Image (cartoon, rainbow, N blue to C red; front, side):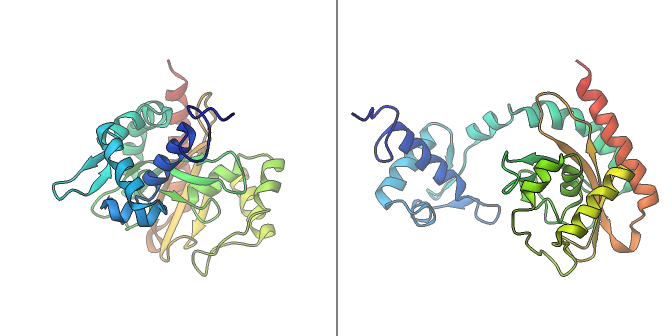
Length: 261
């Protein structure tokens, strides 16, 4: 007998939860407001099911209704998300150092964590970001994800993984984001070894043409995923000899504060 309160791909609670998460996942940075019809089409749910779910989720604060009846991610869900350790601990402790790094460099500054337990699907999840009027445009955003092998923070995260983890990582197909993206295993392993030796990783136009990224891993902190901090600058003003020590110092300062009760 199936326990409809806990199981079942159809009407059980587990199935409802999966469908609700599926609805939330269809929102993107380019589609942050969607109608019920949009939700149905993007999630693959019947229109009546999508409409009912959206109504219930809005009542729970998981979705918000706009003036024209469309839906957006709810402030109630945002409120809960702010309780995550990467927000309450990592981001809040890192922000003063991120701001100092921005003031010293004048460039975009990012903090990212390793997202995903499976090396084959793991990505860099961006949890803090500071930019200014003279910072070069980037593709990153708070809550956004980017590949590990084409980003500075991603390579810094790869540099702190053990050989077993990296062996599993290289079973994946590495996608080329630009003509400069490194997708050859031997070459990328050399980059990782170099990052370990220097204390910081670099990418050169591997995610966005014209951009250079320099990032350092944040020493491990109990209860938090592996993290890294980095700057992104234009190729014309990139200076590894200057930016490298800055990101390494910021990484260690963040770790020191995280270790302080």
